[in-house]
Structure formats: C-alpha cells, structure tokens
Length: 161
Image 1 (cartoon, helix red, strand yellow):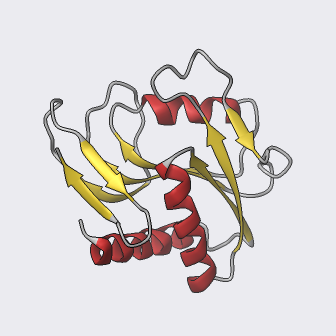
Image 2 (cartoon, rainbow, N blue to C red):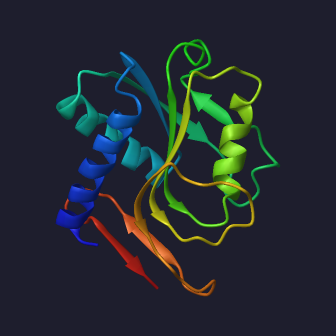
Image 3 (cartoon, rainbow, N blue to C red):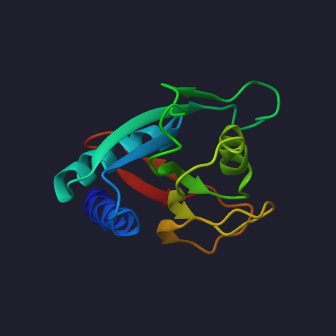
C-alpha cells in the first residue's frame, strides 16, 4: 500500500467505526504502542473530521514479544470512562492475536459499553481467538513473510518482506 491507499483505507475504517458507534456521543480510542498509536492518532483526526463524536485517546504500553512479563499500562487510564463510552483498541497488524489479547486483558474486570478491535492489516495467522471488528486489508501470507507498516508522514507504506 502507498500513502494514498493507506489514507483511503484509514478513512474507510473511520467510517466503519463511526457506523458501529453512531449512537454514542463520545468514544475512547486506545492505540497499542508503536504503529498502533500512530494509526490511532490518524484515526482520531479522521473521526473528528467526519463525525460529531467526541474522541478521547490513550496509549497502551505492552511488550509485544513477551506481554506476560511486564504490566500492561494504559496512559492516560481510560478506566474512569469505560463504563459509559465505547473503547476501540487499535493496532497496525493482527498476526497471531497475542498482542491484542494481552492488550485487552486489563479491560476484562470492567463492564465496557462496547469494545471494538481495529487493525490496518489482518494476516490471519490466529493462535488466539481474536478477530478484528474493523480491518483495513486482509492478507494471506506465509508464516515466513513479514508485513511492514510505516506511517511516518511522507514515508507511509505497507509492504511484504
């Protein structure tokens, strides 16, 4: 994907998020540290442009390689709001589902109004029962291939290695 395709995909995904949450006044976007946060920032800006939703954001810090070894931290904490606003968790690539599963684990003790998982790329290599509600692009890849996502302004691209 090039910059234009990524921008078009983010806009389409933002519309899907808005459609799923059109009955809400506010929404909380939580980006998984790294490119998930980059995607969340762009998604929040697009949602503010296309919808009347009040969009709050937070960052999820997680060790993607060994998420069970360190605490998962939401900054700022959305847990003052999750009872009354939908929570949308965003990452760049969904591969095995491990990162998304662990990122959602701190939310489990709370009764969330609605929880939505959003990814730019879904590789469909599931080891964990995680499905994204909003997907930018679904790719059939081998386990030996790697999807690279770059969202830096002027250098946006998604490619397969």
